[in-house]
Image 1 (tube, one colour):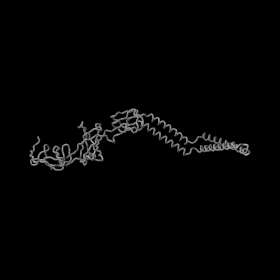
Image 2 (cartoon, rainbow, N blue to C red):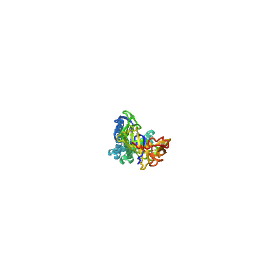
Image 3 (spheres, rainbow, N blue to C red):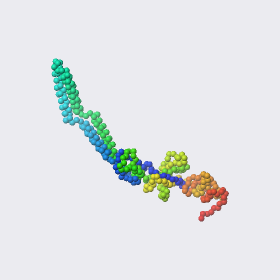
Image 4 (tube, rainbow, N blue to C red):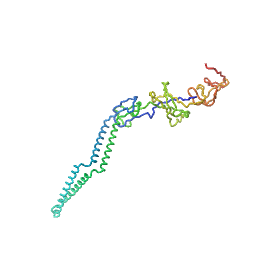
Length: 369
């Protein structure tokens, strides 16, 4: 059985779905930054705090506005008090008495005006005063009717709408207070922390980046010729150049949507398990990609294969003489290469020193020491 693999070079990257880019949620001045870059944080741990005093003042103002609008609504829903109705009745009676008195004066003045005992100017003044009194009585009577009938539904609806608006403003003010404290949405490592105490920030400012490094991507370029064998889910092993004995296992998770037009390579992303956090974004690593096993494969040692002007060749021994043959190769491992054409099972192959021998050169087979 041949278990082929290819060795590639990859670059470690944070998994986008495990990365949180954190910005200010409201405008303000940073009051405290209780974490440092490189620190591990848990979900809900505070990353930075803004000065809450402006937001607290706005919240108190909004609370007062809600209380005021609630009092207005309660008053309208309860209707007018008995003493208010009585006061309106007395005002209406007073206005009516004044109106009747003026009417008597105008009737008396009318006869005098007809006898030219009252001037036109004085008579017109009395009539004007009468009209004003009639209007005052009509207003007082209407007010009394309104108080007796109670609050109209549309006024209660209007007051309710004002209360709803005040409550919405209070909710916004409370949210602004909450936004003064920014916590980590995920557990991970703080990889970037440009936030500084005293800095004035706006919502567009990115102030921290937290990355969950328990899993990490390695980006590799898979040659186009291997795409038929390298599929999502393929097992990979990665190692750092400095500590090659440590192996980090994972699987290919996704491929990019297009190949490189110059090389035909396709970028692939493999997810590696990184529970200890030793793999860091930005590092370069060696990656071995395992391909499906081949049950029946004709193979030769890697050392037996040579290249002649772009064509794979190897040397076989026939009748104690060396001959160069062109072959087609398939899958490979570090030790063996699959031969798909040009070689038959049982052929004797020269594994070392065969390249450059002229065809028909006599050779002698020796037993290994």
